[in-house]
Amino acid sequence: MATTTRDIVTPDTLARASRSLEAISDSELLGEKLTINMGPSHPATHGVLRIVLELDGEVITKADPDVGYLHRGDEKIAENMQYNQFVPYTDRLDYLAPLANNVAYALAIEKLMGWELPPRGKAIRVICCEIARISAHLLGIGAFAMDVGAMTVFLYTFTEREKLYDLIELLTGARFTTSYTRIGGMTRDLPNGFIPALKTTCSGGLMPMPAKTP
Image (cartoon, rainbow, N blue to C red; front, side):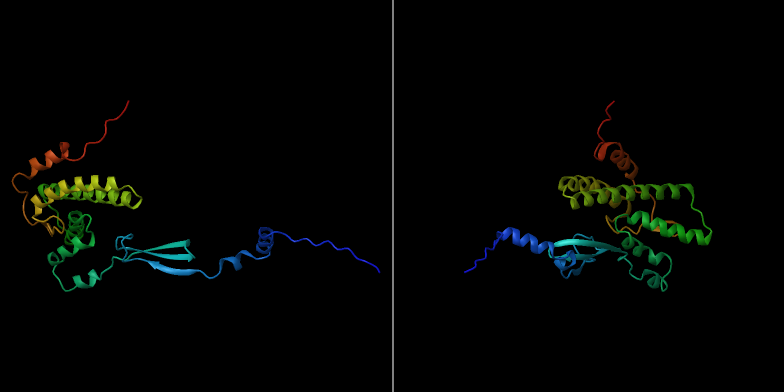
């Protein structure tokens, strides 16, 4: 009787799986992706940012930022107001630096009117804008640091920001939504003791910068 000899190769489990994966295309492996919204009302987006996320399982494969979620129809609201009545709305449009945003709005109206403030009024506005600028930068740096994991930086910047809030409260009577500027000037002159307090804060009240190394 004739006999036939045949070799049979039985690969192990890992080898069989590897060969099967090589025969499958990348698109078949990915499957269906999921698109979800992160924000705009989300603790990690600070209320003004929406991110459209594309997920493959638990892996983020794409992230498209969509900015511009702070429009509240204020232009339409302003149509039924006098110019000075709209000042409190400018606080809310830039709540990081309301003092400066008050000034920006007033300058636009004064330019339309052809008005110019006296030197003292201009000087007070410059002080307001600089305080607001530093305050906003402290918040921005602190919030960014916290977002990337540096919690201590946030605590330092907000400690220094409180000192500026004390100045703002002395100047305007409010700490956050100030409404201090008016078309053609300010609500009131500088209070007694403001300039000495400002000098104290600027000359060492805020966190000192590290000394430069030669």
